[in-house]
Image (cartoon, helix red, strand yellow):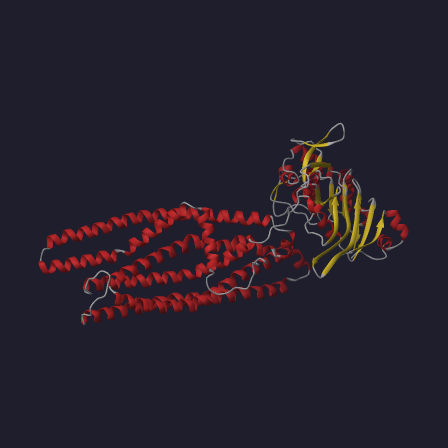
Length: 639
């Protein structure tokens, strides 16, 4: 069954299924505190609803003793009722203080746990998701959508529980004292509900659209920020402003219409409440004037002691109905945010059916491989066999073979056709060809960022579908054309390749790549803090750190996707020796437009439109005088 997408078409109204799920998660996070908080809110609400009962009793007492003239006895009963009400109020104040403080704690804790759950789920999503969604829109899940949940949990939910409790309590008290007056209230509430459905339904639809538009706007801004240099080089500022105007206009229209209907709701509800109050006053006066027999659960007559509290209860009842309607928009926004958050959390994680693991191993004198419980520097594939329950160990060699592989990002657009690649341990395999020929796609398949449609990929004789993805990727290092450095020190960024690496190992990796020379000249050396993806370094320096990061990981297989494309010729000469040392004894896949970087490859494969059209070493391909020869001699360019 297909999962919902974060930008699905919004509909009006509250999604009660989403609301139920949100409450289930909230109460699941705090199974003790939330019921306790709910009890405190209900107690506070009931206390705020019962003054009408005490008012009725006090008026009845005064009325009774007015006729008898026994003022002293009346004072005692009046003060008893007032004292009891004051006690309830005192407890209510304590209860209110407790639940407001607890809700502040619960709200932030809820958001903290939700962000963790979202992020942990996002980390397990396939690369395809990030390739097909704007990063700014993904960020919107953690900012705008989560913020709507904050407002709901901290403000709307307590207010809704409190208002509902007051409405129910007041309604029961009304029903207890007078059926006729209660029926009139019910008639007025029916009209209010109709108004809420009419205006809030439209409002909710546009609030949902506004959430989606906000994500799209943030995605657009993120793209523009990332491409500022390109925008300025091509004098694209005016066009960028024009495109942003369209996106921003859509956000403006959605939010304007949402708030237009939302802002109309509360004034209408307040005026309906005032009209209902007047109607109740007139109706109560007529019932008193014509002494209409009262129908009630209390059995008391409809007199001034019932009429006056009833007017107060009418104001309280309609006021809380208005409060409920006022929270409607906040609930709708929260549901829109929750749907997007849940849609992210519900996305299918990256499928991993592998069971072969990478483990530390030792080679015994007889040549057999056994698992070690400590770091040995030797790795092996631990292969459990379900058929007979045995476990075998295969030393990690770095033998990678693609056999008759077909692949398509989209079912109707095949990218690779019948591709076969044989990389023996220690070989350097290079891919050359025009952009879009399928070079990077092959390396993505080796890493299982994507799964093939047909054919086989074997690693040391093992089908990579049987290898756990974490173990597979642990054995493969990648140096990409686009370098990503994280906020932290230079040492932290190098150690990212292997978190348990020592400082000496990181420094040795930097020397191997040639990065040590410029790192030692930085203000704080290896402790220099990098921010904004290493914006204070040159592109070549950033790439050298990335190479050092791969070197400290010490994987048996390396993938270099245009690894030296951002390094100038002089820097390339400096780093080439280190690169050769890094590649020594490893299986290496190199993607390059600069053919000088692949001349010493053991085998060079020329790709065109997803097919390998030539293969061989540099000398053999030059002798063929085919496509590679034409590329090398400049007869035509790769691009």
